[in-house]
Amino acid sequence: MDFTKIAFKGFFKNKRLKLYIISIALTFGMIISVIYSMYLLNNVLDEKINNNIVNRVIAIGRNDGFSNIDLKNIMTLDNVKVAYNRLSNVQVKLDNDNNILLSYVTIDEIPKVTYGTTFEMIDELQIILPSKTYDNKGKLKDNKNYVGKSISIIYEDLNLEAKVIGIYESKYGGGSAYINEYFKNELINYNEKIMYNGSSYVVIDEYKNVDNVIKTIEEKYNCSAYIPDTSGKRDVQLYKIATIIEVSILILTVIFIYIVISIIVGNIISDEKTDIAILKAIGYKVKDIYTIIKYRILSIMAISFIISCIIAMILNRLIAFIIDYKLDIKLQSKFSVFIVTLVFFIICVYIISIVSIKLNNRKIKKINAIELLKES
Image (cartoon, rainbow, N blue to C red; front, top):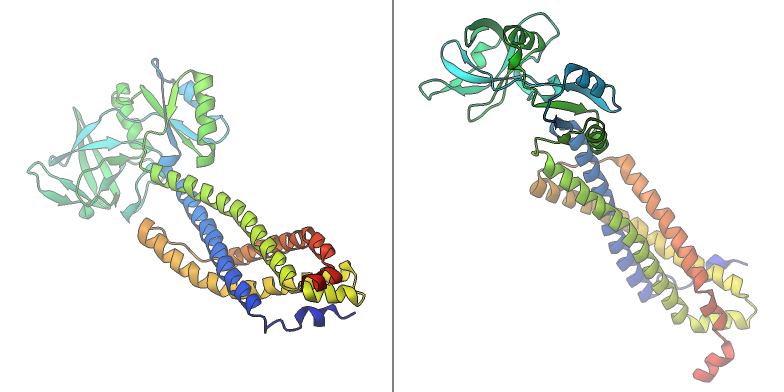
């Protein structure tokens, strides 16, 4: 039996079917676009959180401080890249002109060098300056000319010459000067107390491991541990919100698609009671009618899906523009991710359609030609 001919007979003349197609296409287009955009946003935020070093540095502290042995033991913990102590409040004079605070951190924690280079592993006193600093007269001074040159650094009775290898952006002046390992060791040789032992710092490999490392260190070393720099907290909160929204949308999508398809299947059966009764009367079994209804529903879904893809592509651009405008986050389109989203959606719609049609089989069984004639 050619069920396809029966299924598509008068298909495009049916105004209600056209209405179903338009409604489903608009709905599917919006859902596909939101799922795709939220996935891209989550990826951007996840990468941004992991790449932002401030989210992966924790401060640890206890009353008796941490010895070098403690720090070496902490470095053996899973997901810990490095554990170290920073300098105390070390303020120095540069070229007898202006005062600046020295800072020693890991190379990942140094602000992005905008001119020059970052530290190299050589036995040389090296320093990275902010792009602008205030001199003793309160005038803003550009430090770009120092790059590649040596500069005099005076701390108490200690006078050193260090090479300025780079600068980082500091629009309004101020900021610390960052020194390399060799420079730090020279300061320690002058005065061991120059290192601050009240708290130490631990760099974690990935943000997702931060909580576990904090818990392990607190339990093992009976200390407090926390993220000292909260400037990356906004991205973390956005990521959590985006994840919740994405999961919620996926759950609501499945529920919504099931409800929509069930309503459409029910309406089609109700609209075509007479045709179904006639098919029964001329010898078609419920199984055959089920196949005809299935072809019709899947055809509606297929046409709606094709139109929804076009709608989704248009909405993707609109959502990307809104996210860029409101959150200052640029979403990079990924064709492979869009295809995966579409495949997921097709599978989801197909399974739900089949389940819904089967659940509506009892309606087909209840339709009786004699009863319909009595009603009319």
